[in-house]
Image 1 (cartoon, rainbow, N blue to C red):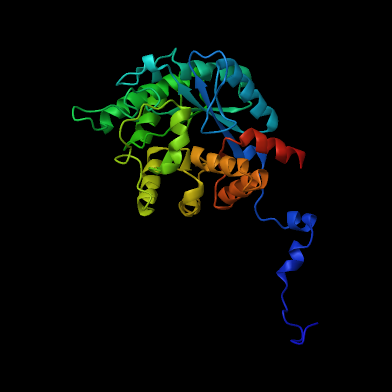
Image 2: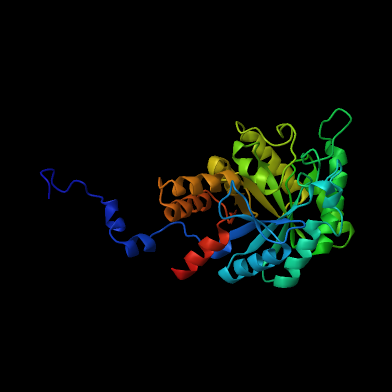
Length: 332
């Protein structure tokens, strides 16, 4: 009792007294099923290739990718999102390796699907940037600009090839106008109404993509500001959301996650479809680098960052820590 009588009358700290109490009243809980593992598979390598800018992440061989998929499945992860890394010699202006049935991404999709069947959701990045010699997400016109409508034709073909290779879900990520409608039509035309579309609805032109460029062996010349969104804008994101839903998106995504939690919350409040968020390479690498320096507690920082993303409204989170965190949660 203080000299102020019964003040304070309300004591929220009572619900923070012990670990069990805090766990019991937690409003947001992470679960292994929340996670999707992004994974890179590189053509022509016999051993996994470490990605220097992303400690602990590798460019997989076909065999090591199969193993990673099984490990994710066993940990309780819901899905795996595949990115193909072709030989530089296989890149061209049209990104034809991305639509070659025997290209590295399609081969990897077949590998993983044969390994896990329907027990793990197999997703594919639907974009040309890994496969073009200029590194852009589409084909270029005579003046070197990304040609939106010509790119859509390539995306339609890419969707069909990925579906044939075994993708349960395709993720159009190039931010071309009309991409969701074109991809949906292309899938339906070959009788693949069963293949879902995870729309990269809100994808900002972000400095946090830096380490990803190494991960996919990017040949990017210039930047992507004419098609990825301006970090200053949120109404633009909501307009993109409305368009993607109208065109047939089954799920929507916000990317990056951490710097755009306000946008993620806006999107989650506005829709009745599943919402995902992608904790991208720069978000991953910052935590790993700070932890390596001893500046932060790595494991606690990872869980805090992921909890924040889920609290903001993400039903699913693409994270390079997916398998690790799922195992940790499974032991709790």
